[in-house]
Length: 248
Length: 71
Image (cartoon, rainbow over all chains, first blue to last red; front, side):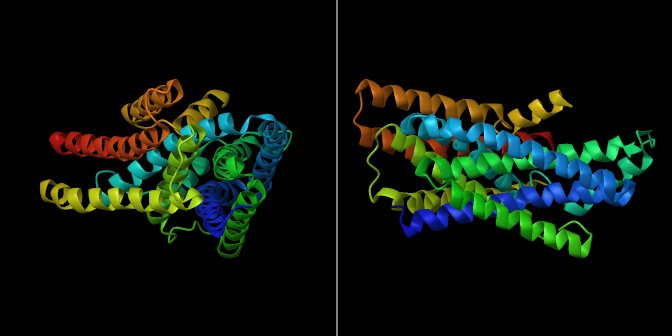
């Protein structure tokens, strides 16, 4: 039976990571819909959701059949690659070495490109808009599927992780449908920073557990790893931001 | 489109190639130590806990140095 720490960590990581991915997908779908029409944009997005459902249906039985230690090891290593990559990028953005991700700029760029592209209709359907929405939802959706599997599978909490991801996607879709603008005010780098810390902590925990490491405190060690990665990340920002600013 | 999707899938896990290589090397080395019995499992845990944040810090420092040199 998972303890409260694990439940909150899994649901929180899944919600926050999926929120970021859903915001990015929403930006492209909105751009496609506003620039070229809602029918192809929504059809492309729906087709991607069907493709994602098929991928999940195919992967589900494989996960159930995999030995738990092998699953923990593979998931742990992939989480380390994924989480530390997000955390590195979030740190570099916080320091000012790379530019912050700007949803308004991404929306404007995508809208401009889709508006300027030649309108080619085949069978009465705007394939360019459909393909743009399909690709955005599929790619961001694959990240959501990976995050759900990564944070949920190794402890048998796929349902909880899926609920967190679904809640994030519903919230973003509802806000997007209401305001018809990208969610530029979402604190994306802050979320990526937090998610990078959490996914890295999960990755360290699962990798060690798959190797038989007796983590002190059991699942509560995840909180210690979150604190460790947070301290390292904030320390790097505190140490390097003034220097980067001074040399700019 | 399939090529672009495959490229983006790899990009989910690999951005800074050296960071990805460092993570894989650390995990491979510590796994070998733990599974061969050359190191007790608690030592493997301690090594993972120290090496992974260090790999992150090294990657960030390298990026900052490279960026400030190019300015």
